Image (cartoon, rainbow, N blue to C red):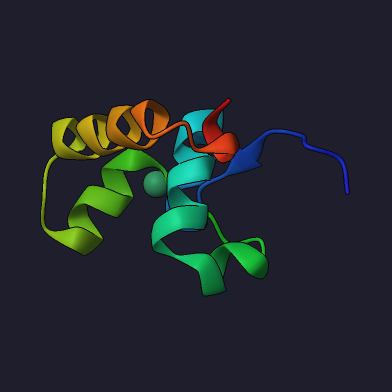
Length: 69
Ligand SMILES: [Zn+2]
């Protein structure tokens, strides 16, 4: 499957590449069914802030996770 731009399954806004990786990490089941969330919707679901999620992405990147390279 091509790695084209994903859209949020809740609000239809574009899900950036990094956020797709985070979806794969945190919501493996959903992402396998091609359901991705943008950071704002993910923050609502997880009851945290977008900043928390961005920090998480940086953490995974620092871990050298290949999903984010
Ligand atoms: Zn959304």
